[in-house]
Image (cartoon, rainbow, N blue to C red; front, side):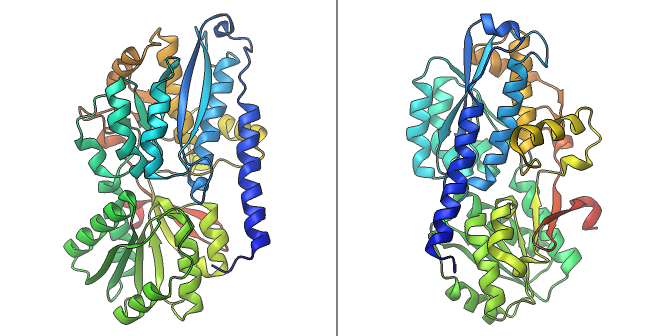
Length: 402
């Protein structure tokens, strides 16, 4: 990656300013809600609020914060409590999952967790959160194995990689129709898991695959700067399509260096971990034509009641359009708010509420199966394409890859 030191300082300051602004705006006030006179309940937000992968998380935090501010102001009805959002920054690191979870469960006022946002930190934090009895709801940790641990307080409010991976493979096999595909991934729980599902799905589609899974070290940290060794392998495969399982911090520079080293003709396809402004910035013009899958749609295309109001409120609060998972996080907090309004303000009562909920949100409908995965009918995967260094919504995967 060819950033100079001044750019790195600027980027770090930009992230700090965003999070600082979020902190200052989240000092909740009573507003017109009756919750101002009631007790305060806390929702802990667990995710990468700083660090190289933060642009995959901050938009969700902003959506969640907006919902809480509006609830405290009485927008959603008679709230019997005041809600406080507590920032718990994992920096996207799996090694931070457990210590952050222990800090969360030690606070008796925290009644629920928004997140964890990534799969690796979820795997580390899950046992601690579940044993404490705190309900924890993610909209972005997509590794399917998280549903196999028997965690009775965990909920996933989005599709997982058993849906996202095949959609990525479908785009490659049905739209790109390459001579073969190279599948590369980082070393994270998310990246390796998604990459393996894509390999399996491409095999079922009779696409010849060369795979190098878990190869890129320090996934999501931005520590890997030189991708030459991986690009050499892609060249040797002579494949015209690449799927990358991993995060934006590596995906953008990888795409840029592929073009610099003569692979501009290889189409880059990634998962939701690459679907951020960090990718388009780091890839630059070389990213043009890249495609990602995401369980998140385009809220500006939503016909849901309240979507246009959400967009205008979000822009008024944050000075920018909603980003990846902004509406999804807003929806999840609205479900917590409805639980509070129903009188369910303890962790077990909230878990019980979530188990039987059916909520019509901005991003999708929400109801959960017995394993607390989103009901299959509510799962949708979308394609996005980098056009002139900006993500452009293509549509539902089932409409595009036929």
